Image (cartoon, one colour):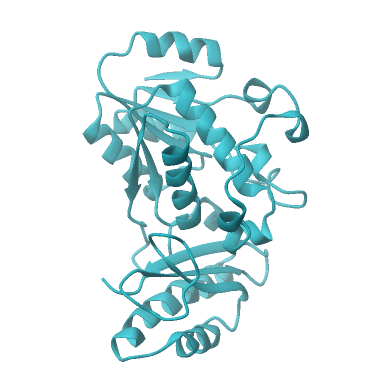
Length: 279
């Protein structure tokens, strides 16, 4: 496995790769959720590239850019043991020639970003799409792997690929959870022991909603029940969208994706999760 931190070396190395290329874009602090993406990529491609890059242009002022967990040595060990060919771990200076205001950015449609995570994190998805497009171009990958936990991000990237005719297949991978159903996230490292227990109420609310739908519960019932379960969290949103269009839904049907974002009480850690209500 090669660890590369500059674009010119990456381009040169890719010239010598034979066969298909799978890309797993990450911000590092790899966990078993990331490993599931990597394992799937390794199983489906001749070569796998994992990017480890904490992307500054997707963080707003006041967000956790400076404290975002970084553990490149451990990340590389996981990648090496998983059969990855290349870890691409550039610096921000290597990836960008200036600050966000001077860069050419890819801006997703307003109606897709002025909601959910995009509403509370203005400019976030501009940064996500721009860095992902850059990684697509650099890696020459045939397939790229993304987790369903970041459902809005996944949908926006799929649309970007379709609208801009990127010659790459986006592979959607299931959410990986702890035994107690907490969705794996790099930001879980921030949680205190008390917050770790409280954070479980996010997945409890989602799985409870899934059961309540079977009993005929409507949207208002689900929201009220979820707020009751998550009363020790600062709930940012509980929303219902059509998984195929990401448009808000008033009625629950077989395409309804329920999404939650909430912050923990001590460290103010923002966590997201979602579930398809009818499966």
